[in-house]
Amino acid sequence: MNSRQANWRDWPFMTYGIIAICVVVFLVETMWPGGSTNAQTLMALGANVAPLVKNGQPWRLFTAMWLHIGFMHLLLNMVSLYYVGINLERIYGHAKFLLIYLYSGLTGNLFSYWHALRTQQITVAAGASTAIFGVFMATAVLYVTMDNPYIRQYARAMWAVIVVNLIFNLIPGAGVDIFGHLGGIIGGALAAFTLAPWGNRFNFKLPAESAMFGVLAVATAGLAVYLL
Image 1 (spheres, rainbow, N blue to C red):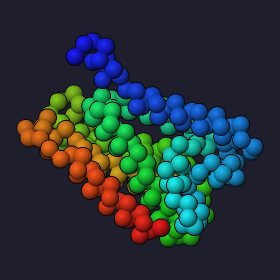
Image 2 (image 1 turned 30 degrees about the vertical axis):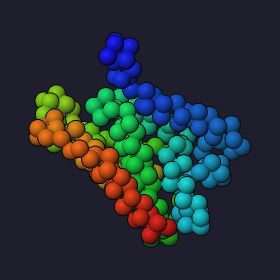
Image 3 (image 1 turned 135 degrees about the vertical axis):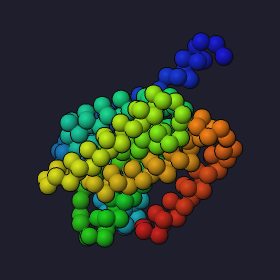
Image 4 (image 1 turned 90 degrees about the horizontal axis):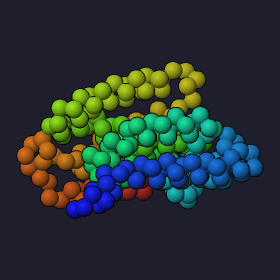
């Protein structure tokens, strides 16, 4: 492998690509009548609204993770994704990182939808934080799956980040979707354990990581169909 190929392999282009997509989508929101904080704009562009999802629009569970409500919402999420995502992508690889990100976002939005449906709340939920909490959790899982002491120390610190953020979620008036974040954490843990580089710590290799993740994805899809 030449140096150009090595640099491309190590360059976290998935993280940068996700950030670029979120920024472009935010610009569309901003130019849309009403702007990015307008509920009608968010619903028109694919926010997670339980009655709409229930009534034949399940794609909102995917599109909601690319929308943001105001510039500060976008900025905080993208800064978090940048600092954690670039490291996680280099450890897991581009494809696995993308799978973890998307799966966490979908499970987070599914949990958010389930909670809104159960409590009969009509909320307009959007943001990449469901996926980002999954990235946080996938990083924290490295404490178990990796033997590199520096990575394990970084992963241990991520547990504190997750706990502090969840405590912040409980503050009255914080305006965050804790069920979406919890769903993202669960999704991140499940995806990370099926896709993790176990051989680095326990000296054996799971030859069917893709198949395992496929089973996980099918099971989640079945749960989504049941809830929808």
